[in-house]
Image (tube, rainbow, N blue to C red; front, side):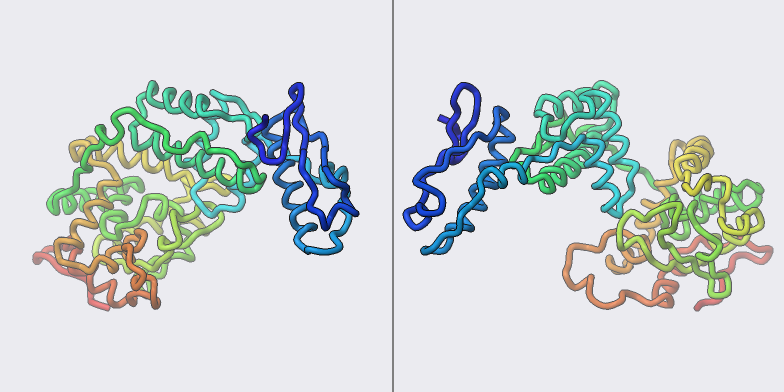
Length: 379
């Protein structure tokens, strides 16, 4: 007997086999027996769809309409779709950074092939994990790759109406989390020294340090700035998506006041900008190459700051705001982090630019001058 509802299997072929309710006998006969497929997955899909149609037709207790079984079977042939095809469809619909899922997809297809999405098994998923472990990937990276593929597979199963268990669900990663290290942060003295060095160096690369350190922005958010995103009359920048780079999430779109070294760094960067982009050397063929900028600035930071990186500036920025007891939802708004898990934080329009500016001025690294230190005029 078959485990698929309303089917029997004879000599490897699945048949739909069902008794007709009394009120539908006149239109459908006493029994329905119809060849489905030799493929159990295909047979299961066809059986479910045929059952849905029949039960809809038989829902009335009298005068059930006739049902053309052959037409139903022909019209409900399961769609076979390659993983790459359904992944392209998924990524076109989702407003996300496409690099992580594309990297995961490329690696997985190189190992398991670009097959019909219904054909992948748990063994294929385990092979993928083993490959990443052997390459020395951190367990957090492996988990992100798994999650990317799992999301694509879930979308495929939903769109294709496949009743299957996702092979990437609940995958075990050996020693997961044991290789996590706490990201180090910069001291205020290191920030001051680095900012002064950046402004006096004439290097566009080094300008990323004060820009990141005094705004809390992600590197790609700064690298992908258009000139129209910069408002020096009001000392602010607009972090918003454009044709060359997306943002990480919806809360990433925001307005960030420019204070202290960040304003000076923007002014200096503008002298080397083109008529559209702040950092045109990292914008090629309509794409933002933030990774190239990251490699360049990290080479300097790691050498002069004992292994610290550009992303450490973002961690440092959050710690600096914590140190002055800045409200958590204000911190999240300034840095474009996902809002804290409270329904109330999503209400209203958030803090004003003036309120944000006041907190930023409390943590800015003071600018050096011949007569000591100073800060810019408040908003």
